[in-house]
Length: 404
Length: 147
Image (tube, rainbow over all chains, first blue to last red; front, side, top):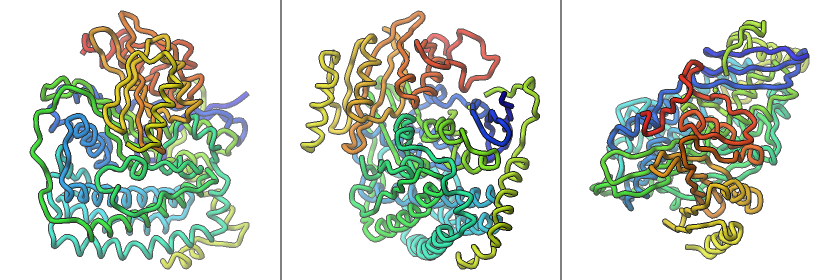
C-alpha cells in the first residue's frame, strides 16, 4: 500500500506553481503524477486577437527566463510563412542575444541545483557569475529581462559599437570561472554521490517521451536545432553539440556547463564577424498560409506553428515549449528513487511551468499535508550533509577547487 | 535540397504508402502530408517507429470542415519537419490516440481534448491538464464557436 505525498502546489521547487503527487512506499517513490494549470494564461487564444507585432510581445511573456526564445521561434515561423529574409547583422544580433540568454539561464539552473543539494556557496557564486550577463542585457536592450529585441524582419535595436568591448570582456571573464566550476564538479566525491546514477533515463525512454534539449543530449541523443536546422547566424558559426551518454543528473549538469563554454565561443565569433548594415527589413503584408518556426531555447526546442488568412492577426498560434515534453519524463526518472533525491531529479530537466502551460489537484483526502519547498530541500540537503560526514569532505573542498 | 533530404522524402512517401492524399513540399525543410482521419494514427506511428521521426507536438485549428489536427514530426538529422494533416469532423470529433505507441503525446492530446474538444480514443488518461477543475464541461476555449 503506497502513501501519497503531495508536493506543492505553491512554490515547491522552482519558484513556480506546480503540484506533484509522489506515491511512496517507505522512502521509495513508486509513482508520480503532476497537475498543472496554475499558470495557464490562455496565450494561444489571446494571440488570435492581436496583430503580428503585438503577438511578438505576448509570446515574449510566455516565459521570463527564455524570453527571447519564444519571440525568435515566432519570428522564424512568420518569416518562413511570408518569405522574409532578415539582414545579416540582425541574424548575428539574434544569435548573440539568444546565447547570452542560454548563459544566464544555465547559470540560474546551476545555482538552484547547488542550493537543492546543500552547496549554498556554489548557489551564491553561480548567481554572482550570472549577474554580469544580466547587466549586459541592460546595456544592450535597456532591460535585464524581457528584452523586446526581436521583430519580424530583424531586430528592434542595434548593438551599439561601444557595447561590443563590454560583451567581450564579460564573456572572457566568465569562461575561466566556468572551467573551474566544471573541474570542481567533476572531481568532487560528494557531488558524484548526489548526482551520479541519480534520476537516470534510458535512451529508449528518452525517444518514447520525445525529449529535447540538454535533457535529450545528456542521454546521447545529439539533437540541437542550432545545428540541425540553423536559423539566425548559427549556420555560419563553428560550435560543438555537447552530449553525454549517461542520462543521469550529473550528465545533464556537465552538458549545461559545457554548453555555456560553447555559448561563449559563439558570442565571440559573432562579435568578430558581425558586419555593419541594417538590422531590419520592411515587412510586407503577411500572406495567407502556414509557417513553422523552431529555436533551440536553453531547455530545448521551442516550436511555434502559425496560420494566417492574410489578415493582420494570425488565425492560430500553437506554441510547444521544451518543458512540455521534458517534464512528463519525470515518471521514467523518479520511480525507484528515494524522496531525498526527488528535488534534484525534478529540477534536472530545468522545468519551466509558465512555458508548459501554457500540471494535478491537491487531494486533501489522502492524508499527508503537502511538503513545501523547505521540507523537500531540507531532505535533500540533509542527504548531502550525511554524505559529507561519511566522506570527510566539506563544501570548502569544492570551493577551493573551483577557485572560489 | 540535399540528396539525403530527397532520399528521406522518398522514404516518407514509401512509408505512407497509399495513405497520403496530398503531398506538399513548402520548402526544403517543411513537408505537409494530408491523410484521412482513419489513417492518421498508423501514418504517424509508422514515421515514428520505422523512420525514427521525433514527435514535436500536435497543433489543432478549428476550421469549417472540422478540427484540423497537424502532427509535427521532426527528422532532426535532416532538419526536416514533416507535418501529417488530417481533419476530424464535428460536432463530437474523435480520433484514435497515438499515446499508447508514443508516450510523448500524452499531454498534448489531453490539451487538445480540453481546449478543442477532440476525443482521443484509447488514450490512457484524458483527464484535464491545464484548465481549472471547475471549468464548465462542453466549453472549449479554442473552438471558434465558443470563443
